[in-house]
Length: 303
Length: 272
Image 1: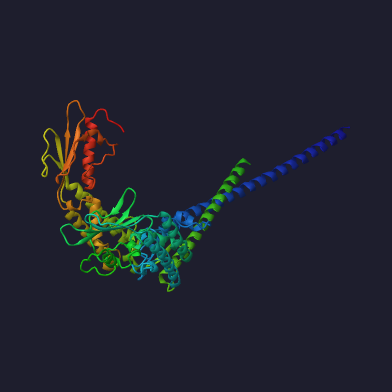
Image 2: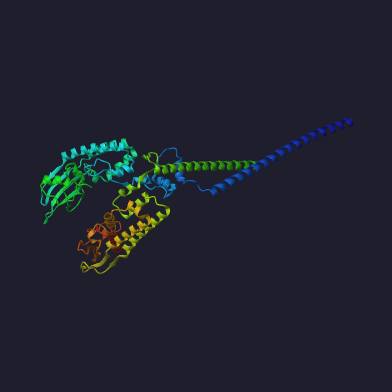
């Protein structure tokens, strides 16, 4: 019985020992695993930290290659046009002082829109494009032909309208005669829109808008803004003198842009819009109104 | 286990930052490449024999020969517009641009100083008799026309020295228009008075029991009858009738003085 008990006891002890050893081995295994994981994680962390530190050092040593605003525009997929500021930044990035050659200079389109130039030649070629506008807008010979045809057609209609609507007054005191071309905004609007619709079709929107800007800016010399506002031309006798003077310009309802005192008649001073009525300029008016022109003023005005 | 999780979270964060930086670098390189493309095309435009208008570029080439025929929008040629034309159309190097900027800065500062140094107040009028019973002050602007024109000549000389004769000829303004409208800007439309001393005599008539009144007259004899002083409170948009065409610096000085007098003398300001 003692042997049996002892045997049972030793048997239990063996089982407990085996279990303990198993648990110990399991715990040892877990500990080794965790230790290894910790070491691996720490190694990984150190590797990543070193890499990020390296990248940070590299980026500190290198400034942004392109201005951020410019980069945003260059990387945009929306196809939006560059703002005036962005256009200037682009040219600045190319290098100021290096955006020109012996004969040419690069100019932003935004800057070009702030400029003005005479787009048409003086009367009697006032439907023809000037050399400067052809060179600045890179107008080809075919485009030039088409645009000039549009101006010629428009001015033909403008002349017909002007001859049909011109009013004559006078004489009155020192004023020998006054000619008035009244405003007709609807006529002017339709005529101008049709003209630039044709021009845009030939040159495209960008160049068409530039052409229109130039035309509107120098309108006093092109067609006197015929129809858009009232144009007047007066011939005055100068008291106490044998010379004649003229007043001309624009009138609106409550204001006017007309020289206050008559100025001497001069060959290059015939108002543009009145060429549509009197293609012969001062000479034609003088013949019609029976007065003598000053010496030297015998041809149509050219500007 | 908690330590391991913390380390893993930190590793994820660091990796995310690394990816973001790599993406930013890739974008920078792409932007730089596109800018180089634009620069290449720009150089190509300058050299092209068969130049056509580039619809897809934000810049164009224009012939230097066209520059004399080009003006800047917004009004007649003045130093301000000349500065804009040089800046936009001449493609100066950075050092040239700096020199030109300094020249214009010196010109405009010099003009301000000229006006300040030649405008003063006195109690003696030369062109008109001071009314009795009034407190009078005479604002005087010395002849400025010759000094302004001399400053403009110096401006043009200095610009020619930096730009050289060829580039100056591309931007040189029409002399009459240039000097005329700059003098209009500084001295008003009274062209006949630009080369003369201009005086504005201001008289305040203070009467007990009633609001003071103000009159003014020029040394040319032009003037107006007394009007109530309250017309000249700072927020009253009263013009100096008969003087509005004169030198802005002179008129502004008169208006400021009148506003000060109105504020000091009138206890109950009349508002609009």
